[in-house]
Length: 516
Image (tube, rainbow, N blue to C red; front, side, top):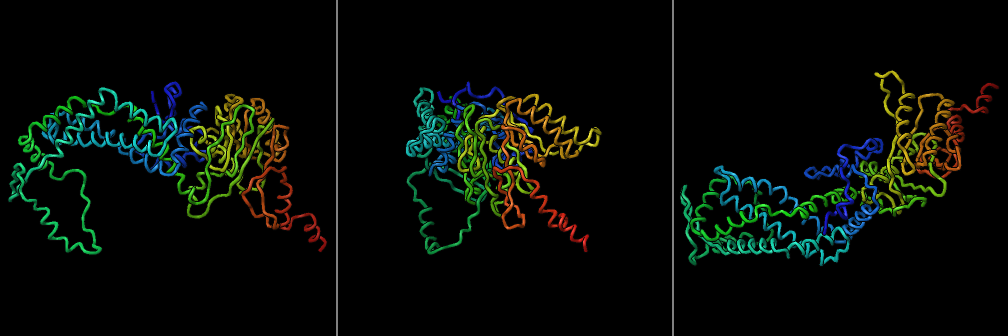
C-alpha cells in the first residue's frame, strides 16, 4: 500500500525528525538556504524535512526519482496546483467540522453545509484531476505514479464509492436549482423559477455595445469572507424551506461523511511542498546559468567527487550581481582529507562550505549544485569554524578550539565528514602546527573524510591520505584572486614573496635602499 512521497514505506521513516536546526547549519550557511526556501511555505511544517539527514540510500533514491520526474516538462505545473488545493482543503476541514458540530447562531446551518459541499467537491475533483494528469503525463516514479494508483484504488473502495456517489448526487441537485429573488427596499423575497424571462440576458445585451474594443476592467476583487453573512444565511434558510429534499440530502452527506479527508492524500499534499519549495528556490539560480545534478550514491571505498559545484547560499545572494565561480574535487583510493591552502580572500572557506552544503542536501534527497557528483551518505557532518572568543569563561580561543574539536573526534567514525576552517589561528605558527598535526592524526585514526582549510602549508604534506588543494591567482603577476581551487602543492612562499615585493620588502629591494 502507498505510504508517502518522501518514504517508500513506514519502515524507512525515522522514528523521530530533527526539529531543531543542526549545529553545522550556521557554519555552512545552510540556514540561509533553508530559511529562504521555506519563506513562501510557512504554513507547512518543512523545517524537519530540511533538518533531518537521511542515511538510508533507498530513501535517497526514492526522493531523487520523484524530484527528477517533477523536473520533466509539464509535470510540476500539473502537480503543484492539485497539491495546493488538497492542502488548502486539509487546512479548512477542521474548521468546517467544528462549525458543523457547533450550536452557535452562525454554525451548523445551510451556509456551513454549503461550504462543506464546496470543499468536498474541490477535494474530489483535485484527486481525480491528479490521477488523470498522471496518466496523461506518463508518470513512472514510485512516489508520484504510486500516489495516482492509490487514488484510483481508493475511489473503488465501497466507502469511497458511496461517498463519491452521494456527493455527486447532491452537487447535481443543487446545480439544477433555479429560483427568483426579488429585492425591494430592505426586503428580499424568494420564489421558485417558473420560466420567467431571464433579465440578465437583456442587461448583458443592453451593455454589450460598451464592451467593444479594449476596455479598462473596473471590477474589484472582493474579500472571500462574506460581508453580509446574515443576509446570505437568511436567503439560504428560505431556500431550505423551498427545497427541503435537496437540503436534507446535503445534511445527510455531512452526517454520513464528516471526516472526508483521507490520511494518505492529506500527507501527500503536505509533503510534496518540500519538493516544491526547493525547486522554487533554485529556479532563478538555474536561469542565471548554474547547473544542478542528482549525485550517484557512492558505496564504501568508491571515489567521491563533485564537478562544477558552488556555494548555493552565495549564488542565491548574488542573483543580481553575478554567479560565483564553480569548482570541483575528488577523493579516491586512500585519500581521506583535502587540505586547502592559499592566499586570504581566495575562496577557500566558500569552497569548504559548498562541499558541506552539498553533502547535507544530498542526504535529504534533493539535487545539488554541479554538473556531476558521486557522494556517500555520511553518519555525521562535523564543522569547526572560527567563533568569537567567549570572554566570560576566560579560557581563550585556543582552549575553545580544543574543547570544541575533541567531542567531535570522540564521536566520529569512518563515515563521518569534517569541515575544519582555520583552526588554531590564535596561537603561534609553531604551536598551531604541532597541535594541528596531533588533531590530524586523531582524525585519520577515525577513518573519517574531511576538508581542512588552513594557513599551515605543512599540513598539506602530512601523509599519503592527504590531498593538497590551493586557491589560485591569475598569471598576470597581479596576484588577483580567481576563486578557483585546484589540486596543487601548497606554495605559500610564492604568495609571501609577492606581498614582500609589493611593499618593497624583498632582500634585493632592502639591500638596494641600504646601498643608497
